[in-house]
Image (cartoon, rainbow, N blue to C red; front, side, top):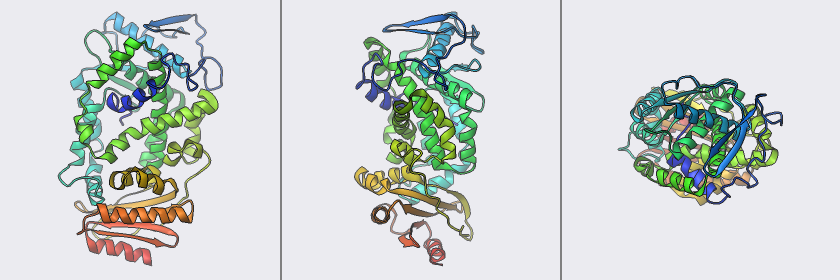
Length: 444
């Protein structure tokens, strides 16, 4: 699974943060000293070494190993540079690696091939999702979702952490790493470091396997927000000249596919970095790195939700309502998925069609939901059951979904919005008789 959509996507986050905070890293969200999970300073028990770069000098613990596996064929100066970045990551994040990280250096072509191979592993889900997004008016009929996402990830990924293998897969230019590539390494090394410490990858995988998709999105917000925050701290330590090089290089990124993608896809890709960064910063402000560390074990048991990431003050307080519903059998259709749409799901859906102002008001009162997605190999059917925090929230979502249905769903398709037993039902289907079947089942 991809952990990093870097350069332009991450740049959107770090550029805004870097231009509003001192480059010395002395703002109130930056660590004044590194701490481990128990609040103590990380140490290997060895003398410290100094990592020097233009504009910054950082004292760090001496590594417990003198070389990294898998990079023996690289020039010695590149090996030294990578080892220095490992130590910088430990210093910024306040944790130490349990084992030496595995770094795999590849060419641009090899990186793109590996990314495309990872996407192809999920290809079985694309036809059903393609049909659903077109039914909901989020994706144009001529667009093929799998092609769009394959091109998009191939264009935007500048490196990723593979939790299955523990590898950091990163490209290298001749002559070493650029400023952007060093920042990417810090981000990916943070994933490797926190996965070693908190074993987050199996947790996310189990969430996906069990179709707990909103919870998985929230947890990814923590994972990516953590790495983006650490990357931001690294950028704050760069000199003005280095920052200029960073912005210049990032500005040359080809974002053609991203720019032309539907808004809901762009927002979905950016969410774990953008909202995740704000969420991580709020944890850090409340309890330093220890609060961030604790969240890795707290969030899965809450359960976490994208609502808590979007509104950090809701974390551990505003827990999702479990919305129960009996499964409906549709002749000729397979139940592709039952999961939770989530506050963020409503936001991206409504924002694209009705605008942010409507999306914000309607989704803010999210209490809980459940949805059913059916597919017959060609056509889609969809039932979404929603409960708001208050009756007013239910009414606001109903009004928004009625407008959405009128605006986004094609005239020849079935769509219905109605309240059944204090639950708001949104029904859509490519085939009108199928939609009527779902509605009749809801009416009992």
